[in-house]
Image 1 (cartoon, rainbow, N blue to C red):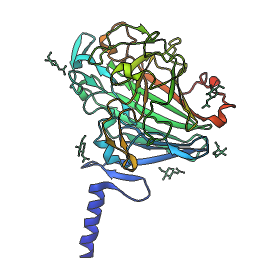
Image 2 (cartoon, protein in one colour):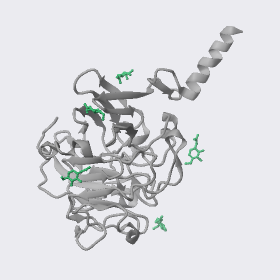
Image 3 (tube, rainbow, N blue to C red):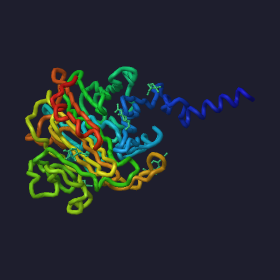
Image 4 (cartoon, helix red, strand yellow):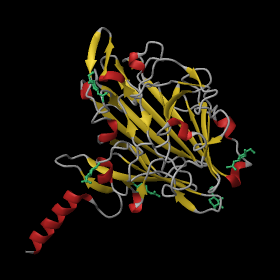
Length: 383
Ligand SMILES: *[C@@H]1O[C@H](CO)[C@@H](O)[C@H](O)[C@H]1NC(C)=O
Ligand SMILES: *[C@@H]1O[C@H](CO)[C@@H](O)[C@H](O)[C@H]1NC(C)=O
Ligand SMILES: *[C@@H]1O[C@H](CO)[C@@H](O)[C@H](O)[C@H]1NC(C)=O
Ligand SMILES: *[C@@H]1O[C@H](CO)[C@@H](O)[C@H](O)[C@H]1NC(C)=O
Ligand SMILES: *[C@@H]1O[C@H](CO)[C@@H](O)[C@H](O)[C@H]1NC(C)=O
């Protein structure tokens, strides 16, 4: 009887998935791959990840009063991530953003992709990189630079994309509340498109503080890629001047959002020369109430600014209900639908031409603003 009870409990643990100690949280059905939750800490910053979607689950840092808070939207359990449609915290791919008409051609061949956004393909299709188990290839939270490395092998014809690729995402916590993200991809046999994006929703006032409309944003982008009614770029690069898209000077996100219907969901062309080795200043977000500030740098050509328009009463951490604009995304990436626009920078990689996407987040509070040396950070090169 006791043995039966034990067996039954074990089965329950596997089926509903949680084990004390925080490591193994959910056991994927009929697979030996484990989904876990991993935590890295450096100074006053701690970040939780899961290998489901190579996801950032939380990022906790102090506010101006020294009070710690979580500034990332998400769920309490991995099970909830498996059923989400918001892409909370995950890495999206093989091709982030929209591919118009769910098709493209490459080297004379036509490729048809599964549609998961009207007639378009969004974030790599219905089972993209946000919805797969990544391998934890390395974790080190005992060094000066705590790091976690996730890896995923995407097969030939997976979600309709040609060619096998090997992808890695490394998260690294540096001192002074800096988070470095490096996304790499290598084509093993033939050319294929790759455009990865980190899809964390930020709310600097805490994930459960309401909306981000009073937060201030500055985007170092003089141009954007206007879209049609299905959010597919027309192919034109337009100036932001004289439009509600102009954040060259810092403004609150809510200041002109009503002129845009649902809000911001648009790709900006980041100013500065396209040098894949150099990080460009991309965005600064500030929240007056908490005194928190986030600076974003990348080596990518574009950044999708999304004001969380489509969040619909999403039940998140601690039972908090996220509503539209509960968080914002700054998805650095190539331009949307570049596969169907010759004039956009190419997203085709090949065995001799790997992909490398770098991001740097720097978190500050009003208190340590005076000693901010982050203008120099843009020059830091990293592998
Ligand atoms: C370091 O990582 C291990 C494995 O994920 C985890 O059990 C432990 O809690 C972590 N330590 C800290 C200080 O986060
Ligand atoms: C951590 O936060 C405390 C309280 O705000 C502060 O006094 C301390 O300097 C911080 N330490 C680091 C390493 O940032
Ligand atoms: C999955 O999400 C849908 C809505 O997006 C919801 O109706 C359903 O109850 C969820 N399933 C689970 C098991 O949480
Ligand atoms: C998808 O394309 C078909 C055929 O052109 C059209 O009838 C339909 O309205 C489109 N659907 C959406 C959501 O745009
Ligand atoms: C940091 O300092 C700059 C320039 O002195 C100022 O514009 C900005 O508002 C400050 N940031 C915060 C979070 O207080």
